[in-house]
Length: 206
Image (cartoon, rainbow, N blue to C red; front, side):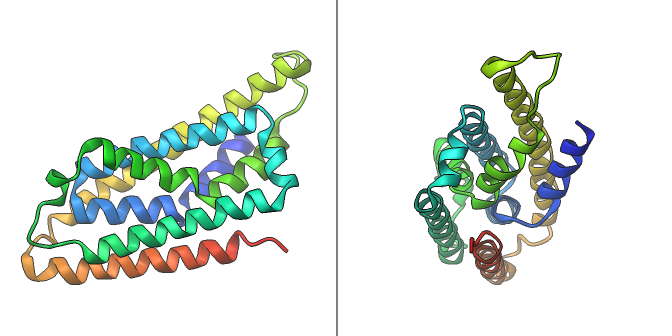
């Protein structure tokens, strides 16, 4: 179990789309927006955990076209979020204009199509599922193990994501002056594009 926890920590502390998006959103729209998106990301992780628990991850791994469709949908969505950040109007208060449900669903979809998370549940989680007398044998025992690993992953990831949001919200107060807002948003948008390019490279399959 310790090995799994360390693996999750390394994965989540490595720069990726969730980290980049949550930091960008918080710096641009505030802590409330970031925390709502964090809840959405956690819900997206739950989808991946359920998919892996019921063995659908094997289906994704066996059919490359399914994986590639999810991967490129995620890339397109991240680029859309980068474009939206670049276009954001400094004269408005976006955190008040965007409904809470919209912020939640943006976080949800940014993770459901996150190739980094998909790869983890398809390639890494199965390696930690094995026969354990505590759970017994058979599908029920394997499902219990997968559920436990998924819950641990979601708890660790959510704690890290919330910490990123809180840190970004502190930095935001230093960047709120009008003449700083536009260049800061543009830098964040470019950073999100660079992270997306890195994701495209690191999640490619031969």
